[in-house]
Amino acid sequence: DSGVTQTPKHLITATGQRVTLRCSPRSGDLSVYWYQQSLDQGLQFLIQYYNGEERAKGNILERFSAQQFPDLHSELNLSSLELGDSALYFCASSVGGGGQEYNEQFFGPGTRLTVL
Amino acid sequence: GQSLEQPSEVTAVEGAIVQINCTYQTSGFYGLSWYQQHDGGAPTFLSYNALDGLEETGRFSSFLSRSDSYGYLLLQELQMKDSASYFCAVSSLYNFNKFYFGSGTKLNVKP
Image (cartoon, rainbow over all chains, first blue to last red; front, top):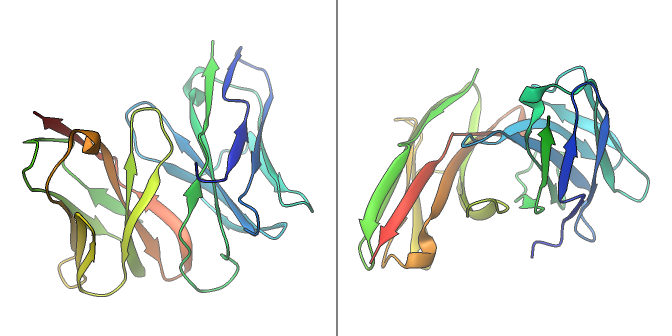
């Protein structure tokens, strides 16, 4: 158990809908990262937040947005869902990530999103 | 842009040694990480190399050659529980924590 929690574990929804995925980082970690993993693929970096501010952005679609709240939990919002958005969505956290230093990332158990 | 190449699948027997290679192309390379992921599970950190050479952690070792844009993960004394996918990931000088992952190598350990 990494100490990172994600809810819900599974989510089944229809095309065109909007969902919110939630992540709570390990105690003391200031950075949260979101990744998408499609079937049998690697992890695609979506976005990083550090202490409430966006720090780095990957190939995140405009239909997707995220935020990190004052208590450091984060939410990933996915809207106008398409079949191709079906994937595992992982959240990771690290102690730092606000500066130019490497930080080991600890991953949560993921949310499996199925769009029908 | 970034690209990473890993073999898609490797099979080895219990007790053997296996090497999983990773070649990368990236602008502003900073370091190479390795993660293990069991089916449907969360990726877990194995090792990190920013400098050339070998890093050893128990049965696992990781190697980096920056001049060759190449690294590998070496697993010794293979156990059945090592059956999993292994991902290499590069991080860049522009953001050390923005990881680009390879598509993973599925390791099958047979008795």
